[in-house]
Amino acid sequence: MTQPHKEAIRFENVSYSVGDVSILTKISGSIIANQITTLVGPSGSGKTTLLKLCNGLISPTDGEIWIEDQAIDTYDPVDLRREIGFALQSAPMIRGTVYDNLALPLTLQNKELLKKEALHYLDTVGLEYKFLTYNAADLSGGQRQKVSIARTLVNESPILLLDEITSALDQTSAYDIEQLIRNIKDIHGKTIIWITHNLIQAKELGDYTWIMADGKVVETGTSDILHHPTTATAQRFIEGGQA
Ligand SMILES: Nc1ncnc2c1ncn2[C@@H]1O[C@H](COP(=O)(O)OP(=O)(O)OP(=O)(O)O)[C@@H](O)[C@H]1O
Ligand SMILES: [Mg+2]
View 1 (spheres, rainbow, N blue to C red):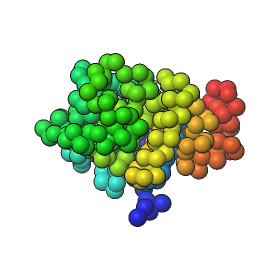
View 2 (view 1 turned 30 degrees about the horizontal axis):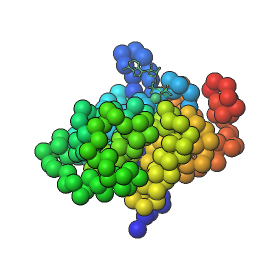
View 3 (view 1 turned 135 degrees about the horizontal axis):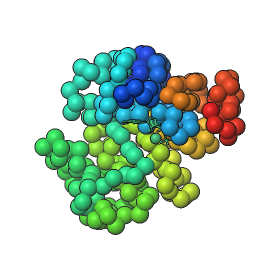
View 4 (view 1 turned 120 degrees about the vertical axis):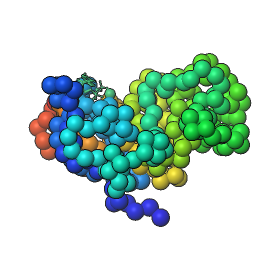
């Protein structure tokens, strides 16, 4: 059973800086489990950095992050990667077939992905079985993004981080991916954080939205806040100006 208000991720006063440069400042808040939280804000506001903190690619300079009620710095790195999948706009593929790419998360753990399971993941993302033996380099942008999403599903991670996964795609492929993510949330009950520059997408697909500006979270709430932002910074951003 899903518990609508369970926290999947909690940030407590999280800051991140590189040398003297402050990139994120005192981020606090919770990401609700089994829901889609869209993350919006101007370029350079710190969205990607926040996601990198969630899967341990980088560590906070200050503050605490809790994943499923466990402090992130107490996770074994392999367990953390299993807990959290990360899909990127560029959908990077390793050299080889689609199967090789789907199997990668397990290969890295010296495990095998059965062909039957690989076909199941292809099916989940709406790709025909014939794609399994395709050379990954030959895929279209939309197909590559689907394989990338399928690959994040292989670990059966309860949390998925998506960084601008549709911004390089044509409208039809973007729509396909949006429906796919919605289904993944509904059917598999995943917790999803989705960075997007498309505010319509953020409103329509988000249950919750975080608005960032200048390394801070300036407003959070249900995705309705995109219709009625209350802070001046969020209003400026949504009206198309710079926050
Ligand atoms: N390792 C680093 N060293 C110095 N500055 C960094 C480092 N990593 C990120 N930054 C800076 O931190 C800021 C936030 O970067 P980030 O990639 O998180 O922004 P973003 O909101 O994802 O932007 P975009 O929408 O363009 O992807 C940027 O100004 C970036 O240049
Ligand atoms: Mg980014």
